[in-house]
Length: 261
Length: 158
Image (cartoon, rainbow over all chains, first blue to last red; front, top):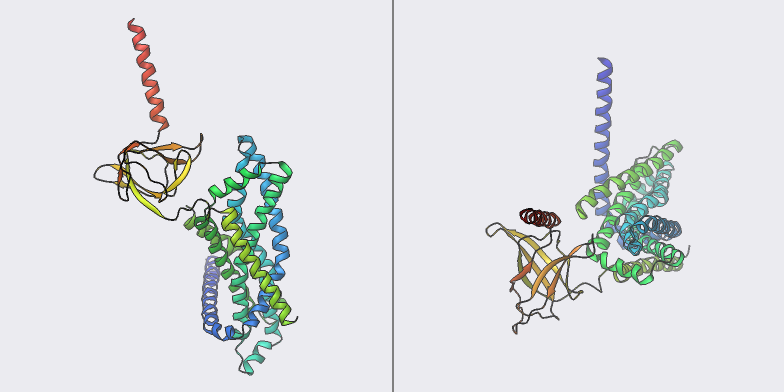
């Protein structure tokens, strides 16, 4: 009997703590919005963060996009060729990248590359009491530290996802047209006939904005609530990757079922 | 890092994003080629639209001249009401035929317009009278079976 009660108690505690986590996350978002005007007055702080989260992520994004596109081209050709419609490879690569893989894979890489850096940086600032020092000097850490990183993530993520899709399509083109020898004109014309700007490309961009929001907010929150120890910061970094990845995949399912069905 | 250098890199990054979006819109998507801007709307009634969907192509002689606007069911007359948006540059006679065809064996369904011989052209809000429904494979097969069964009966009588 006691065992069952214990299990129920643990279940309740974990549900309560995750709910309160969601609540404080929402409060962090509200605070960020309130202090955003202050941080926009010093926009070069945000630009510096865009450099770290966006520009420095370009290499990993471009390389992985090219390989994802090449794999899509190879595998798609293998199947489509059986039905004698290998020209449809352009549509397959473009739709897969623009609708799903572009935003999702970019968000996963973004969480791994930029999200962890944000969490570790803020966690370490908290551990070394830099955040408290700022508060002592009447500088709001939200305006100085959190808001620039939040907006940098929100701006970088859609740009990275768009670049990912473009480079991926070029990777598919490289394999399908230049290596395998699918007809060049059919590759592009079938793609243009079947990819819709408003329904596919804009919806993919909306997805990437939502993912950018989720990843950045989770990374910031985990950094701020990390216990001020070495172990706490490392745990928080791990949590950032796990929670960001899971919520990106979950959100992707929800968004896809709203957008494309 | 120097601020100017930082600004340049971020500027390159944002410009790359804009270029990528522009590239996707023009090269990958159909923003320039198939998006018909100024259109006029005509109606057509069908008994059966098959798999026709909103935004499907409207073709004349195989050239895309418009898009399907909306498809509704009329609960009083019991037929489908299809609104068709045709590019303003193209005018069609009043007795134009509207047929629902399938692109390829398994492809998407589209609406084909075949011009008639009337002197008066279709205007916005007009109704295309002559329509041909989508082919339903089951109906076709059952008709075929029925006809061939009828042939057998005739042979028996002889």
